[in-house]
Image (cartoon, rainbow, N blue to C red; front, side):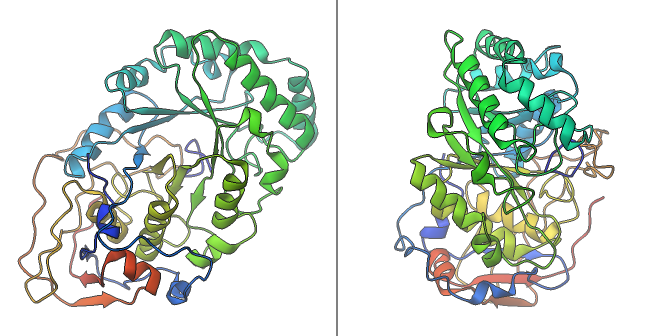
Length: 425
């Protein structure tokens, strides 16, 4: 999926292996999403880390906006998470014309400045492989373009991009090249001619690596599942891939998380494929989608990443996928915030007076109702530094019946409390 039109310190998850209680305050409604099969144990899973063993310190972030507004929103999202810094900045180059794919018009300046400010930050840049990338060109046209590209027709554009990134002082940018190539959305799709597509990828990587001073890492990131072509058929080779990513959303409607793990070319295949090729994994895009405000998906996706330790992950944070800019997912938002806040929000022993975080206030930005990828930027009165009110007791609290492996990771029951919550719009 794309953000253009179709949506697309201490570790925040350390408590998952540290044996403490998570209590999330949820809006009225069912406590679970579509994933009722999660209660069945998965025999393929390795035994979780014993209680008291801290999780790794993940690099995570969110896609919030293409330009300078995205950099500013990262600061605000960090404040919403109690000061837990987002180490990953994620943006996309426009795919309309080659001059924009080259990073022209000062598009990358604010992101480069953010990256240079701290040495442990990671700049992730999605780079289209073709102009007119979302123009719904027919397969025969895409096939012709791929064949020309494989012969070197577009090499100069990627040399220009590489030189610009080095000149901006971000030579170690992670390049998510030709993302979701196994689908049908983009002109840079693979299915019309996989052999030419792989040759084209190799040319781009070779050209960009030839620029003096570069330290780029190239992330091969299909969408989860089968789509138009099995994504391993597009894999261009270990010598030109540094990271094996996956864009993973909670879809299609009615599918449970175990199915997302076990489906052909799904989450488990991704992990196994990367291990076979000796590559780290990533999740450049992930979030809610067809199954709505699905708290079980949110819990299990975060636990999956805590278990399999991607190099980085970035949630797509506008409607319908997000948890901060989008007001449509208050339950998943409360859970995400509870898990990733630093310091963690209060999680004392369960009882009639257990404190819990209220459903967080979205920052007044209504998301992306027109699927343009550019949420409304109107001013509002949201103050991310304002403390979140914590009720003195939790009405109608019910422990969640987690599968054994996940209950072991959380160190006990997850208490879900249903209370009235204002929907911020």
